[in-house]
View 1 (spheres, rainbow over the protein chains, first blue to last red):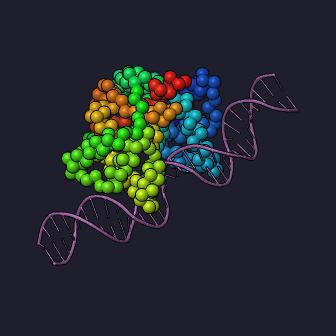
View 2: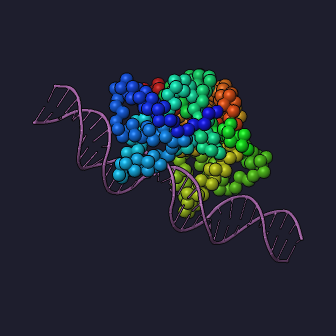
View 3: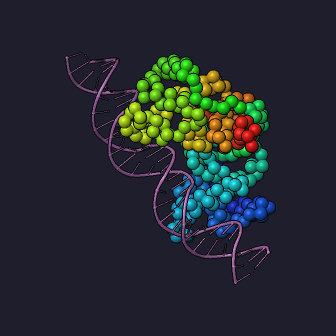
Length: 155
Length: 155
DNA sequence: CGGGCAAGTGTTATAGTATAACATAATAGG
DNA sequence: CCTATTATGTTATACTATAACACTTGCCCG
């Protein structure tokens, strides 16, 4: 498992550029506010809480209120640029490469890291289970918690 | 997909008896309060919110406060008698039969039903993904939202 | 017996997460 | 220009969850 860490500035720039392109393709716009929230997410070492991001905005932005951050996050999630970690009420920037495939979040209970791993065929299995049940799938959430490789070695 | 619905009283009784046995095996006790919360869960048509269950307690119990219900729920989840639906901040009684295997929750966005379906090999795939990442798995959460068979037919 | 530990519950207070509803600004197309 | 749409600002409040401490009960052990 790779530790999720803040990206180097250049990687961040590339990431933001890719996000920009993705928005354009979708006919939506990555406004300054949304871009700012995305970079805040990219700067995080792990999943970020909404209210922490809100604090991050405050330095430059005066007094941002909760709806501001929740709307930006909702946008980023809708465009597939970020994910919501349901079991932690937190958000992570999407690793755009990984996102192309079926992914699962591995959440370390020790260090808080969240890594987006390839879920192999899990998503297909879920799709089949849904099909058997006559269920129309719209969104699938796969999350697992435990100990990451680093913390396991330390223990 | 079978609709999750309130169980007939006799089924409920059997369910509670099974829960009792399970607690005994684990060396824990299903106290009156915990039993009451479990039956409240079983009476639900779908996932129940903590504060709704709290209201349910109030009729007979005077003024139950939040910690009361959260502690009971924490116990039921710990014993595997209930599940927490992370993406909805809600709880469901565990279908004890289904729980023996790998399950996924199919959450209908229309009617709110939650059904516990067999996840096929998804859990094994997740275990493999974790293994590849050197990650020690402790808990896996599989949730999917969409439209259940009934609501799909209605649409 | 009786002291004290452990488990369960009661109670108060507060922390943390999220959204409704309405106001304002900016921009684009007719 | 005007007006529809999208984005953001702002106020207030709803919803979810836990910390911390008090009290009771039952049980083990000295």
